Image (tube, rainbow, N blue to C red; front, side, top):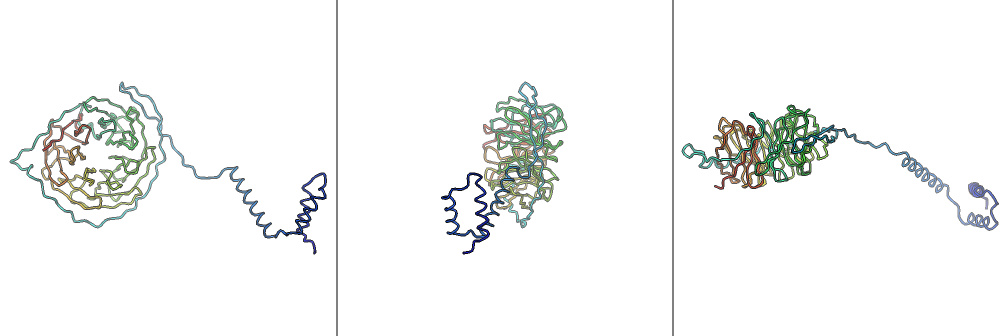
Length: 416
């Protein structure tokens, strides 16, 4: 048998691995016997060489590190902590970069609204309205200084003071104020406030393009969002969603990451639906629905919608120009004319009594509208009367709370 040159090369390499002393006769015999039993194919050696090269390259990459993309996180700057005594202490805040995402738009076929029976027996000229008498707690001097209001997870009421900060009101009326950082006062006017999924209160600062977070202790952190924000609500996805007028919708996580969604028209009211989506009102006379992924569906309505809320019946309720309406999760629209409510509709909420409540301002008087799930509508006068009412929310202990000129007012819903 003729020796293979490759075998001879391998034998030479094996012999060269031993420096001294030379291999024993037994070792040499074993080597010779292995050579006689099998031959290593050239293909296997080539494959082995390639595998070794791959291992070496992988090891080199592991040692030196990859070039993966890393997202930068920008520092928000300083927020403030305030105690009840009014002492301000700087605290750090964080803001992740603002991302812009174009929404996917689909338009649903125009539904035929079903008009429920018109107002039942409580708004005629011969039957005077019942007057709801409330208790007021003064927060500010002047007119038009209070806007958003919401019940907190701590059982208190939290109100947004235009230019002054946030106020906390206990159920018995004890007020504590938490001012903004000095640099944001009077140019960071708060417009709306809501309870966040993290147990904090979140609010919009309309004129300085920021979203704020305040802890129950009073710690305030501000996050730039890139445009003026209006209404804010906790979403079903663990984030907060807010309206931005002509800029569409925004979404901010509890860590401060912001995503923008373009919408077909300017957005005002926003609420979280029972179907896991966000619902909103538009200037184009439609109710919009957006999925957490950004797919939008629109539902035309007869009354130009402004405010919107989730009713305790699982439907989305809205108010508009002299009317209120509801949209089911599947998109069925039902609307009610309320011609007697000629004032400025200011706020809407699901009441603690299971009904939907809307408050309005003059010229029609300081008015509350109660809408029962089956469609019965009742109007009430409110006392004391004020020039402006801005928002309404349900609080603990079964009361309705309203922001008005420099005051918050507490009303007990009537049982009849």
